[in-house]
Length: 387
Image (cartoon, rainbow, N blue to C red; front, side, top):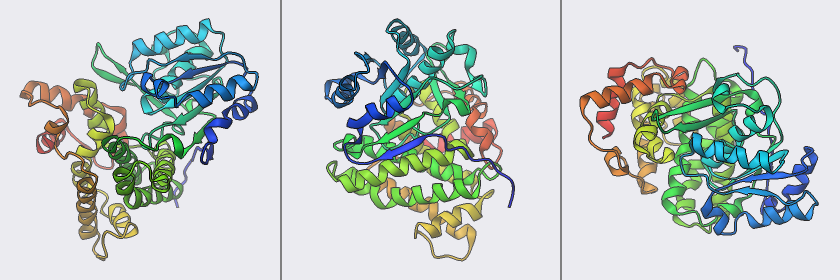
């Protein structure tokens, strides 16, 4: 067995209505005045209300609330939140929302802890010490941001994603309350579920950085998604299905934050930055094509997944690996997800712009973990096939 390092610093709490006891968690980490990061829809829907009540009832002072995180957070959003947190004298952050909200909270925490410009800390391993306490309450089951060591923020002017990655970026605690994902719209449920599935399958394929621990988490997360995502998509009130997909998302988050992702995420980052597509939806469209591209490099890993998921009984690795690709496409159909880029708002683009998009994907940090080297021509071919 090859040597490996595995990070799992985030405390994970799961259970119905656990979000209402968040004050106990914040106080345990030494927090005295919380800064809540969320989005306008969640705030208006009352999702954040029990969290505010818990914090204020515990004598943590009146919380400051930033509820203007967009679906694809950017530099301007982070800077606005940082200014509010600093003015309010906050010493800890509570993130309530999906991946965009949690990633925003992570980068706000960098600036709140160290001061200075967020751009000074972009890249990998540029954080010098532990950050202020951060507790995350995910309201979607897909991103795994509540346990990951990375954050992605959009640079709208440059039309690219900025990566922040460090072991210090991992949240102190993640509160998984399935009651908060009940009623999530079917299309969003399916898209975020496929984000988690992509995390699982790409982490499994990252042979140079994966381990027996990340493989185990990736496989079990994928199994939970295959078994429960159709039910969660079909019935928003199915608490059991919601619970399993929420836990699967966190497990996949632990897998990919240790092993990495790959070509699917690299292309999704480039496409999302340029065209504003939903990240989970974009991953879903690219996933079968990314699996096909990597099939020759990791047939054994894909075959392992296919057999574990009950998709294939073939003893031949290549046949079983192809069965996995087919199984992913069938799951997309069961969840009524689009299978083409043009169906999610990507326009037909000229060759010159396609080359720029491919170049952005080839230079995206996610692709360094892909098991097969990809060229600009390879990326262009996948884009054309997925269009």
